[in-house]
Image (tube, rainbow over all chains, first blue to last red; front, side, top):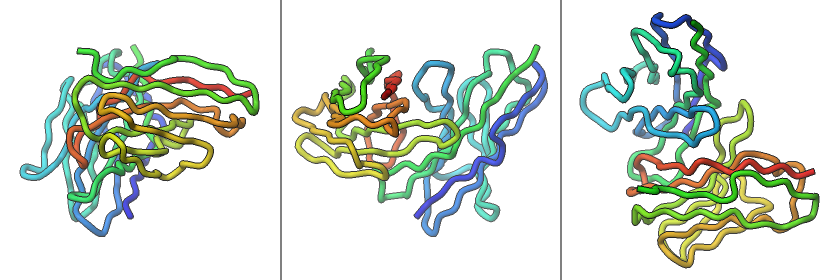
Length: 114
Length: 112
């Protein structure tokens, strides 16, 4: 079975500062990895995904994430955040080739302050 | 493009009442899902479907039922509402069985 741990429930940060949201996963088989973002009162939307290839993945709105197989991590980063990045961010995994059941982390609430 | 559409957006139920949450998608996706989101718990899979006429249980199916008569629609039924079903419900769909999920905007349900 797979599991996802998001190490921070809340991350406050000042505008234009860098941010890292941490995600560790556990799986005995190969997985695909995703970050989703949920803006207030909206559904989730895909930020970026890692399927294979380069371990550095770039997504929308200037976010990127790095897949580290040895540390089973998939941390999300942005070099300079904006007020509009205030949202909840979810890390998720799904087993390669044996899908249907995307497993989500508990979420990290990013709060960007002026 | 409408994507995934859920109705209603909000609902208050009394204990023991029944209701159906509607979900429709216009992307011709075979795979559809129902999740519930509780604070600090992430999303939990209730039911999923791999195509019209085929459904299966997820992690937390108790108290819910689904049907899938068409590719587009995947309604979720609560038969005897309980306070433990107070949550935000999301419908989602995907093109492949291990791909990106496309979400609706959610239904906030309170059972009092």
